[in-house]
Length: 458
Image (cartoon, rainbow, N blue to C red; front, side, top):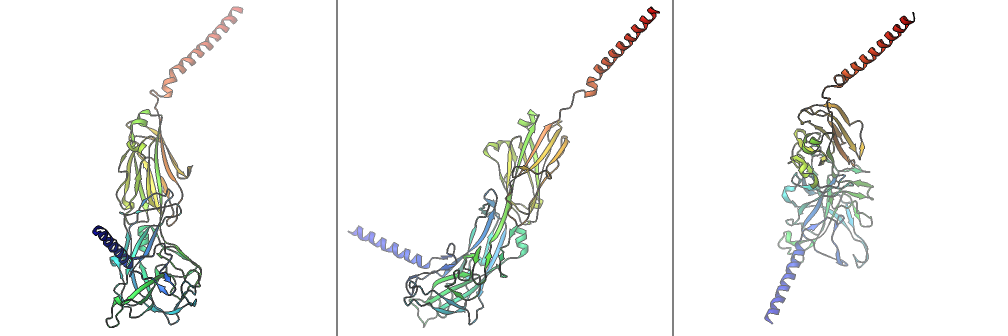
């Protein structure tokens, strides 16, 4: 019996803790389409936590849908009361699930009060230590902007509107190789969002002791346009989960994109022909240099298959570095390949090989294959590449701020040129001289015979 009572006590304690946790949990806007807050029954809203999590989305692009090194980019967020007028209102639904009277309610929006606190001093950032998920058509990468309203004495029930601003410069975008969010169909600031906070008196409110505990938050709405909102309008003026892509059909049609990071990959392959020694024994040194508009360090990812692991030497997967001063160096045996993943678009890649085989001379063909098709303009041929000479570089250039779905592969083929031991002329000249000598003797002999016969006849 005592044991049963003990278990019951534990169960009550766990349930109480769960209820307490739910009441004070952070409200996460991700996947909520810009709206948090429901009525348990008509005219009875459910209390919400006083910390709101908005999303910041960085969309990753890569044709191989590979995980790539993230760019170095930092955003700083600030929040303040939004400017509203006497005509700025919010009108909710007349649905019976909302109001028993089936009558919509309209209230005047108030400018946000107090000083909400954004965690981490308002900073959200990606660094080279992060990895980005990618897809050919883009993959979301989410970080959360945490905003606390817990310390605010609202002073009255109502709907309070705040403006949150994303602060970043065009120079920071360019340095990181990140494409800034865009809006089409409207002239609006893509770095602003508005938050409506729905406030009522707390159940234990004490008007004689003003303070934050007197107020209960029962809903949030995040949207783009600082204007009146009517639930009858399908998307509530462009609701959104934060700084991410969204489409607004009302209040003037507009489409917003998220910040994007576009990358591409280059595969380098080696082939040797006519030289069995070099084909099986020699690893040819390659250097890859970059010319990029990106000035922040970039974390390239090198990949070699398990099958080729013993056929490649060098730092395959280097640390983050400034592309414009970095040289990617590897040595590759014939038949092996190395792939460089996560090169930011807007970067020119230059690949060349050095002949390090003692005494060997090769005809070198350097082919750039784009989607398995040879690019004649970028491919090169070196008719005779001697020891310690470098091949003519192959250059791959991509457009900045643009999704590049091309598959790039550089294949460098060395064909051994074998030198004749004596030379063609020296080798065959004695035989040619003997042949001509024999013909000459034969001709002279015939002439002498003819002359002898004429003399005899005479």
